[in-house]
Each structure stands twice: as C-alpha cells, then as structure tokens.
Image (cartoon, rainbow, N blue to C red):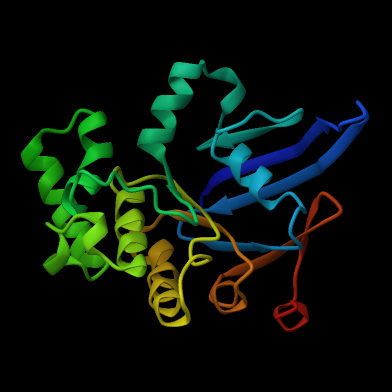
Length: 233
C-alpha cells in the first residue's frame, strides 16, 4: 500500500530551566500507509504528543523531516501548512474542542466551509459522517446536549470532513468512561479501513492499542516495535 506519511530522523530538543538541552525525540523514523492504523504507547513524558505535533505540522522538528504524500513540510510556508492541516490532516484530541454555540452538524461542516465548500455540499457531507458514527438523530444537538462519548464521536466526524490523508489522535478516549471508550474504540478500529485514511493514535489505553494494525512504543526518544503481550496494562 502507498505510504501517506513519513518521518525521517525526527529530533526535538528543548532547553531546560538551567539552559541545558533536553532531547525529547532522538531520531524518530516512521512511515504510515493508506488504510493503516498505527498505535503508539509509552510512558507519560516519553515524547508521544510531541511526535504527534510534528507529524501534524503543529510544530517543527529540531532536525529531520516529515513528508505527506512525498512532499516535505519544510518546503511549505506557514500559510501553506495551515491550509494543509485543514485539507489533508484530521485531528482528534483528548478533549473534543467542539464550538459550543454550534450544533453537531455545524461543527462537522466548519472545516468544509473553511475549505470553500458551499452549505449544501458541507451539510450533506456532515450528515453522512454523523451517520457513520451513529449520531444522525443527534446532529442538531449542541455539544452541551451530548454525552462525552457523543461529543468525541462528533470530533471524529469533524476530523474526517475533508477526507484527510491521515488522522492523528492524541488520547482520544482518555477522558471517557469504559462504556463510551469501547464505543469509540470500535469506531477507530474501522476508521482507517472504511475511509482509506492513514491513522496514528497515541494512547495509554491497551484496549484501543490492541485494535491497531501495528503497535509501537516510544522509548528513549525512539519508536520501537511493541509486542502486544508485553505492553503494560
């Protein structure tokens, strides 16, 4: 299958309070193919979220490069990267970040409208995506009228609005109870396959990680293969 996202030798260094360098990422290599679900686990503070921010063009590496569909981020201007994030990369975070004054349908429509779609096109796409996550009957509800799990499913639908090449998720079920987490995990399990997008999920949840096609662990600033049975619960 074709490679959608590739990271080569990613390094990220911050300065500590005493001015000494702290290496968070120490040369990460990663490639993700279309339709592939990759889960990344690791201890808190290991650099998982930092890596996701670099993969999503939300931050720039100290060294190394990220390529989407073969094109490096470094060759693009800030405006081009912003357009790329809206059109080609979907994001799902631990907290859904829905706009409270807009209903579920309008929240999903927003990325499409920003990209230039008209109301009819955006509305039709939003309706289809909300149906795919089981929320057709709730599409006109405001976020405050939805459960935490429902709000996160709206966030997943929104991430898919522009048919992105890749979806990046950071602890997507970290703020949900067990029942809502399992519902969301089921959606993620079929997302890459059903929508033919690449999917990278950072998670501490073993049940979600076990559904991935490929499982990696962040250790010492590097990504290493992880055997499912060896991942701590």
